Length: 246
Length: 262
Image 1: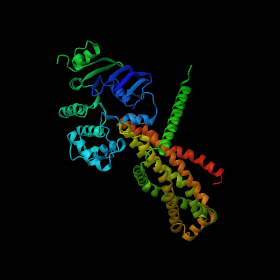
Image 2: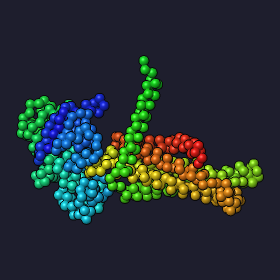
Image 3: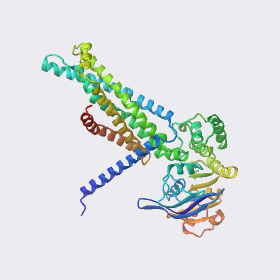
Image 4: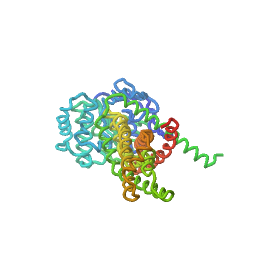
């Protein structure tokens, strides 16, 4: 379980997150929506301490990672996370095989001889095969995202963080990624946090949706409740996304 | 009322001290990871080979022609003064071993390998690959910086020895062909008048230069902002800063080595 208490984050004078408190329960698929540049990626990066919050607590299975500077504590907590980056963040100098095996090498004690089998298995999970020896530069945007997802789940994390998982993808690949996210939760029971500006995606896949606006969660609730929200920012965002009557 | 000039100087001073502080912390982190956890042998060897090979041709050309021109100028000046080219080998070897070998090689390495390191780390930074390392259980300092620091510390001294040798050979070629000095006389001058400390003076300096180039290149790479444009900017800044610092550092390290008798 991830418990967030009074989380504050600012860049210089600019406040990005203000007193955010929320609990993300085991097995939940929690989505954070909001317009671009509102601080969604900042929020998700704070959860895994890629960014250090100014104040507040982030309890991951009871361990507070918000204020610690201990690299070993952070590394230990990060082991329970998988992270799908917006642009994939695959290592350019490594092949697909090496990219996926990277996490296995540093996060697990699995013997090296097992890597090819696991890599094949994870690639199959994201609908890819025979790409092991390709470099990221030889892959399409959609393939990169899927390889990145395979890399994120290779070490079988307890929590998955998705940063704009469908941005820049065509409708077919978007549908595929959407199914993958729900599969990760349903088949592997992974607790997931998705940040996206794709409201339709968030409402379709999430158990709960939160709207980030002005540094705060102005609405948090199940998709059905979220659609009925009277909050001005939510209503406007729904209208812009053309989902108010759907 | 604040004067724009004092405000500018103050701002630049603050920015410089901030940068020095951050670079020091980065180096502290390199030392921390150097002695902890498993060592990245493969990455270190790969980086050493890449940095060395990258700079080899340019180093060879630069040092060979520098030796040639040194020989030509020394011999010609000597001819004008004494009617014969005297101590050409001594002058070429002395200049190459103590100053030109280490400094020119460092400038080449800063411009060639340093730029590659900044661009590579900078690209990884702006494409979130550095963040990805954290999420995959690896500290970027351990995985990226430690191997590059070691690679610079190994390759720069080796390249300098190579440059010293080629410079002396280039000088020998001109001395023999153009100035009519027999090779045995050219080499004899070197053996007679040069001591091991002359070589050590230049050789020891390369470790300071290597450390400085590694620090600047890695620091600039890790602090890259703003996409492809940012990578270009960081790379240029790293190369310029490294080259200037090599020259500045050269004086102070030389003075220190002279003071201790090397």
